[in-house]
Image 1 (cartoon, chains in turn purple, blue):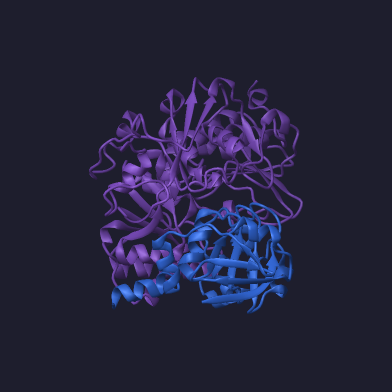
Image 2 (cartoon, each protein chain N blue to C red):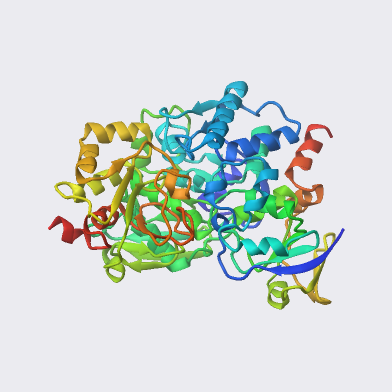
Length: 420
Length: 163
């Protein structure tokens, strides 16, 4: 029976002889991850389960990244508990100053390989699909169960195949590709499905851009968003990991729930307007929208690629007097690389602040949240009402070129105009 | 088991978990202390309508976004007996199952339910009645039924640890 990539990965991680969409199976995890928000809640549940040891400490990783550095005594306490628990159980722990934002970090550190199943206590665990791994976001009780037994229940998803064709134009990035998908299928269009990204346009994307695309699969409601591993994934993993993996793709005659084709040559920069990631319009339509803050960073778009794009726009420019700019490199490694490349200097000289890696303001945790009546343009993944602070604030999602250009102009503009 | 209660309607499509439990309160990990913040970014007055006989009736694609299980956890803490809606976001739905909060996908029930109407659910048969009208609901996979029947993943895990 022909299978999709998602089916193949799940089949290799469960006891069933065969699987089809809708089957609910117990799936074994190769990696279990949680953070300073989901971890401590999971530890309470684990205790209630009467389990004192984790199933395999080598497969468990904890990352302090959400309220990092601690915004108050309570969040400091969460991080202390995360650290103490990790030490007691003998699992890997990335503390402040030693890691960064979990999803970028785990890829960087070689935890993620194609074909792996990753259970993460964070909805953006689907980011690992960039490397062909079935990463999927779970709640804390699920994570507790994974910590105890190394498995979780999972409905085998159908697959929506997204084919990107052609070459993208200037100032169009991975962010715009996934926003284009959201514009097509909406915030519920991927429910009970996995997205699979293929085509010459997908092949041409760097791993950084694939991270941006896979990251927002959950915004379509999908279980994960997969890029079949190719030579770019191989090159990325080289020297990062000694975990075994083999490339896999969907069978040519596999059944897909839906097939989308997006022509990149016709794609322009897009913006998701408040208050839904699927509320997507062309940048040209949103031009002139005033912004009080621009925010470049987070688990979707805080990579070197994003920082280079932002610096390209900001070099020799100043942030508009009515606007603030926050730049958040996703990991310590990216932070240092950006420093070595002189990018941080470009940002600071332009009048931005550069933050330590953190989830921070993206989820309203601190470190640059918005006040009532304020509007931000961000490279983050969610623009729900109140997501970044006040329920009376607004968030527009866009790529790093667009966010940087908006910082300079004080409003949404075509980056080409700023660079001219 | 029969769960019976009064419909509390949460209007709108795509209601996300951020508005139902804003990020700034995620520094709380004790479920007891989370209670005052349920629906804080959406409609805090909804809390006044909760209580031991409340059954939430939602719009489509309910519970999108963050994996924070603070939302179903606190729905339970406020006495909500079940959540009924046409469709649910994946992680929200599984969090309900895992925490032993009954979650039922029923377009018909969501269509006919009005604020304050009576809802009766037979958890064994999956039948749902809204003011006496029998409504069809989406089937639930055996493994999910098993977790639900156990009262969630914690009791399910306990029976696995000490059968």
